[in-house]
Image 1 (spheres, rainbow over the protein chains, first blue to last red):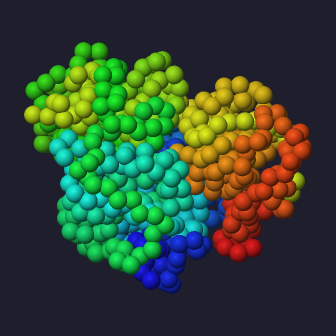
Image 2 (cartoon, each protein chain N blue to C red; image 1 turned 45 degrees about the horizontal axis):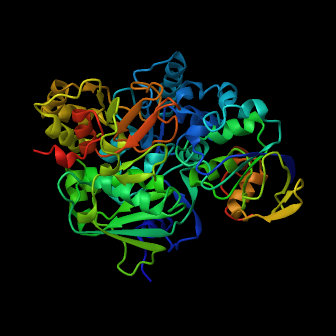
Image 3 (tube, rainbow over the protein chains, first blue to last red; image 1 turned 120 degrees about the horizontal axis):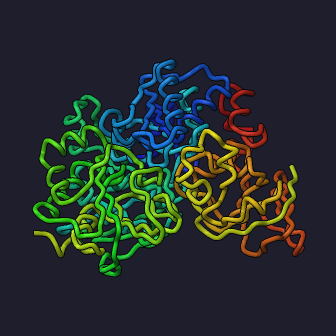
Length: 418
Length: 167
């Protein structure tokens, strides 16, 4: 009997065949932490009596949630992590480098790796056929100090996507549809394995969006087989040598199969305050918004900013609407700047913020007022998520965000596409 | 290990943003300060009403969302004796056991707010003393049971120098 991609990667790592449901201690290739979870991980490492990172060059420390620091307490946490990275020889990604998951995709993730991070969206790197999953600070400290951690090999849900996306529709709409279909706990403890012609045709940016939100259905990780798109992406990042073909066996066994035709997917939103409270944009069209946010590890990549700029170029954001744009990494920022994408967005009325996670996690840079409504390209809309429990967050694609910024009310992007 | 306490009821899908809101991000290195806001966005009066040893009794998918271990840590610091829930999100489940906060997965629908509960972790039984019924508990995997018995993951690794998959 064949193996799913998750079973294959974990089996390879431990050197014996593993099946869904088995427990195993598995070596870890890349460990990451950030300014919200890193200080605790570092303190726990010491409390366990472990000397330090087994692989300092694969221990990544990101100052990405609170930058530039809005509070002295966070400044002190930043100083603590800088000191740790210096002393331990870990890789420090200081303020402005980018969101941890974006930088991991650009510089580290590769097919067949096991990636563990003290952030729930670590699953993003599954787009490069890595087994990548989020854990808490102490678990990450164990992965860092012992070079391994325990895993329950997950059952997999095969998500088979046929056909092709229509204009103005893409990966974000598909993953929102899927989360609505499965429910916020529909894939708990499982892996979502995405495949089929529409996934094969997706660029890496779209695949990262899919895997990023696997956790919003409760999944341990999302995965896409490694193929020519993976190779091209790694080559563009100067890492073609890290490429190899890696996919599930044709006779792999799945807990469940979901089949969908991409041509039937329409622009989707998740309504407050649940990610699985999903509806077509048409059902909430006309809802006034105060703020639109385009950014995050879900949708802050060059392709996302290009999509938004294509809609906003030569036009103006509606009066009374604040459009915030945050490139996901320094690389994305530079590329968007050089391509003129940022100029188009700024001319339309956008405010560009430095690469990071601030607004999405309610830390700073775009906290909502009481009763305010935000349409956001991010991944969570729980009550209080964007910093105020009396505010309302809708989630959507960058195209829907741009169209909404233009009109000031939630708008189907297909209405404004040139 | 037998625990006793009163039930504080919550609904389905209580996220780690409800438990440890992002607007207190700057308090993550001051856990006793952060603990004053525990579960604030699900029940603003919870921290004031909680007595040491009380239980958080919730519905489906408790602890979904962010990986912040601060969520179960401040629940424990505030005095929560255990979490009883119909189901628990994956990262929260690991984190709670890692910090020594027992998680009991059972059908919580019949438990009422204020009920006196007794939890026998070894036998895997929850007794609603107020209403007089027992609930069956889903067993923990051996590795999690070993971590919980050691008092958490830090103690587990200190004691054994590695992870024990079998007890």
